[in-house]
Amino acid sequence: MLYAIVGTDTPNSLDARLRVRPAHLARLQTLQEAGRLVLAGPFPAIDSNDPGPAGFSGSLIVAEFASQEDAQAWADQDPYLAEGVYACVSVKPFKKVFPA
Image (cartoon, rainbow, N blue to C red; front, side, top):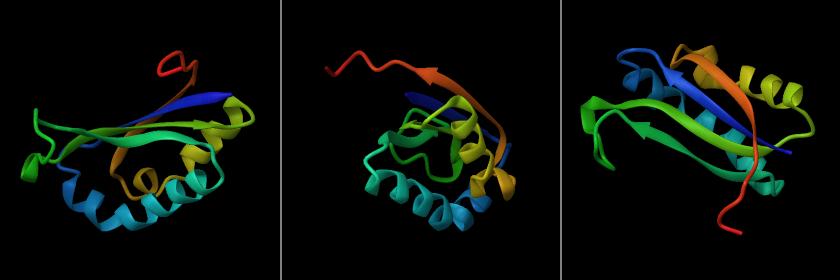
């Protein structure tokens, strides 16, 4: 089943986000190589593809996991959470309708 993983950044997280980004992306790359990643990306803190020093307010990952518990366990190991980029992470079942 698919799960939506939403990480909410701590205030002023940009420096930590940039520092930890390679480890965060490596985990996403592993999901992608396994054919389990639907989409992933950050939420710019302002209405811009390149928010500059405004940074980001969080991230969305939609990926396939065997169970919600597995998705939560994966999310709990994210370097962004461990290094204080994310203040919290929520995991919810997700049903993809479009694109078909």
